[in-house]
Image (cartoon, rainbow, N blue to C red):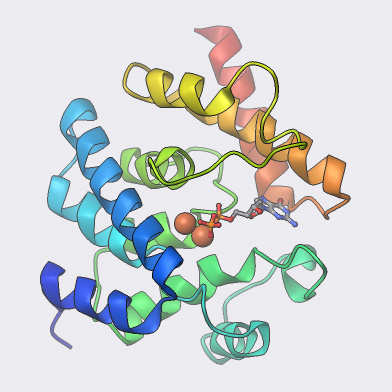
Length: 206
Ligand code: DGI
Ligand code: FE
Ligand code: FE
């Protein structure tokens, strides 16, 4: 299958995503391209991964699940259930769609989509860029009254830090995501916790 061009992918996303999700997608793609320039990653890869990272976000949980089951994707316990915070499965379903529907063959791009919600220990440069761009893109708004928006503005800090040190930005984002999930009573995916543990220990050794 031929991979669609970036502008074809953009049109596809405009068609299938809700308007706000599409705006967010563009923000992630362009933020990822900037981070790619700064940190020495291929900008085309960053644009494609950013453009597709949420391609499964606007489909039902049942559909996401059937896509994963059909392609033998292993699911974690929290991913199997559509609890009140069911935000996890779109990442893995999105990686399947990127390959099967949009013809992406590059494993690094597919992994960046697959791990964009939880992260994983030992992420590639592109995986880190997409994970961080997803959080810091300019349209990402504060969620007031939750740990997402503590007194010290984590968005501003994470945005600044990501241009200097990706691992430090990762830890900042993971710390806030974990606090937010605890506060909301959401199940923590083992991958999210492992990623935090891995990068916070790595930072201490620096
Ligand atoms: O799809 P986006 O909203 O752009 O961003 P995302 O793919 O990073 O998803 C963000 C949501 O995923 C956010 O509400 C926090 C949630 N999330 C991240 N790690 C975990 C998680 N949710 C659960 N239940 N468990 C996790 O470990
Ligand atoms: Fe997402
Ligand atoms: Fe996103």
